[in-house]
Length: 307
Ligand SMILES: NC(=O)c1ccc[n+]([C@@H]2O[C@H](COP(=O)([O-])OP(=O)(O)OC[C@H]3O[C@@H](n4cnc5c(N)ncnc54)[C@H](O)[C@@H]3O)[C@@H](O)[C@H]2O)c1
Image (cartoon, rainbow, N blue to C red; front, top):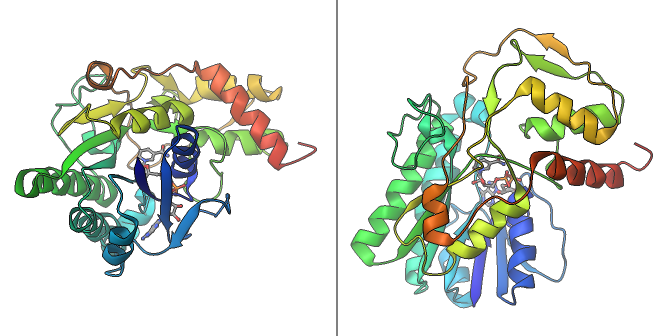
């Protein structure tokens, strides 16, 4: 089938493109290269802002059956500093992608949401029907994207699945900017720089490996998960301190972080329940954390020869 991937030059999007090509699909990508980079010259990549009105014409010319929408302003901190820029990419951009998909006669849009939409939840792991409590412009923009996707299904019959991602880690994630803590620890430990854990190290996150995440996307391009929000996570909580120990083990480095004061606004704990995702898509996470961390460290060593 023909699939369009937005954010195709990014961390998760680039792995998704690889997976879809390996599955035999015809793939095109959209990315403005604001943080992503063009890796595979063989893949058609349009350098375009997802909020650009010119998008619809390009999408119609390609004629995708499914659009996987991953392009986004991904930083919570940036969204707090400039909520309008965040909304332009994440809300207007999503509306533009949905409208382009509709005009092109696409069957389905797979929308990428974040467990940030759950805020501080009542129960862990968070079920996919939990109340949405966005606590940042970024989280609010993801909720808005979900609502737009639902509305396009109701109004136009354009099918959708929302994939709500936990903390994704793996090869190609970069430690620059707002990248995940795994790549920050990995980069620092491989280059002998100090690492920092905020607060008492007891804050928890649900770490899911990027190849498992793209497997959920690949499955969601079919009919499964129609009209649903599906969590893509392990359901397990790992504390910052435990994560440091595991990354240090994978990197063969000392497990000796510095401790810094807690950061304002950091959520205390998170994990999400993917049982509905298993029922709807037959998906489950397959990569144990230490195994995924070892693969991530091996990739990072290749990027930084000598590390
Ligand atoms: N990495 C995670 O842990 C995580 C967790 C939850 C949700 N997500 C979501 O997954 C998706 C992919 O995130 P990622 O981690 O791969 O981040 P990423 O920054 O590597 O990828 C985002 C891509 O979107 C592109 N982009 C940004 N603004 C754009 C615009 N206006 N027009 C076109 N392209 C634009 C960037 O250049 C980049 O290549 C995002 O929607 C993000 O919100 C990620």
